[in-house]
View 1 (cartoon, rainbow, N blue to C red):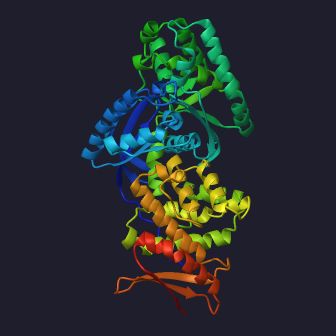
View 2 (view 1 turned 180 degrees about the horizontal axis):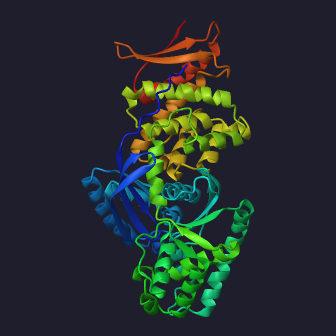
View 3 (view 1 turned 90 degrees about the vertical axis):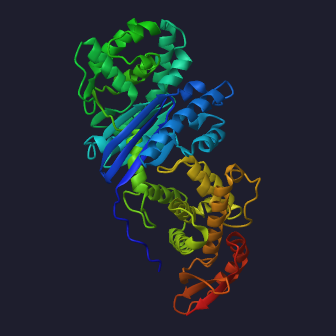
Length: 524
């Protein structure tokens, strides 16, 4: 049987979490001292307004690209000087821009920062993970709202599990562009804005109401800006920290009254306590918050200063050292298993193939030298490789490709899902061609890694063709004559003629990818 490595002992790490948001780009650099604690080393923030930089064709402009490059270069310089591991995610604006892939590729080329574009559901999950680190909400059913520039994330969670999570296109930059372009603001535009927000919130909030929650938490810049405005209006000294403070429904109505009187941008910039950079977009954000407050009858919000960036930090730590079997903290493995079970896969066979694939990956490390991230992509692909059988056997590898490619699994970015889907796409029939869908969009390094994982998966699948788990162990040895030998141990006296026949067919793809000869041998 496959001997799994022990879970790694926690190692202190310095991590830079970068949030490429629709309004601003934030970076938080921390020393992760344990799985549950960190010390902030540095933070950076720049307003780029990506949501306002999408042209009529749905593309992010070259000006937006240049501004983002400048900001990310500066952040990378700070992170590198502090020797921090960088992880960057892109949210709503990058999700929706038609040229997102090209935009992200250019960012990487110019800055060396690989921005992961995450789904709305994944963003909501990371916000929840981040809020948990800062507030004592673990055992409480908690509603969390994060009003960003391009979208609003809504989560209800308890005991570390999301009971409900969604992302709505109700960001303050987006809504300002749609409804509040005039200056001063008109009654007609404000009524249209409120109607639009309520129409989109009501069906979602009815589900939130059905589930129920004990406390409400706001984690965005919007709710902090509104609290600062209230303190200014009431001539109250600034709080030492807003984290854990409360914004009441009465205070929201007070802020709304003040903002409705200050119809021009100039007047809003003069309001006490309000950051002038927020003056243009705060009305839209306030309308979203006030609508949620009214519809759900919320009396008060607890403000959280931990959210997406802290979620990125802790998700990065949770990703490190997760192995084949997974556990309750391994959200990615839970997502994969849940997805596979929806398609009624043969789980015993799936585990057997996954065991083979991971064993081959680990033993062939001296040949491929891929990172642990690829180990996890292969693990997920191996487990899910037969989802397409839900439709039928013919072309099931293609069906699986489309299922996974279009899925939104907690813990995975959009590109990671594309990588996993592509590995599965080539676990049978032919190997990739340069012009193939999705594959052609990957750079050469990713294409090479996909080929390696696909070759390993193909061989793994062939070694359980009879679906009876006859082969017990795989050991890879390199011969002195530069040939690689694959030695397959048998269970008792089972005949594996079918498996050997199928493996001989898949041998060619393996040999091409690894540039070696492969011998299949039996040892009793």
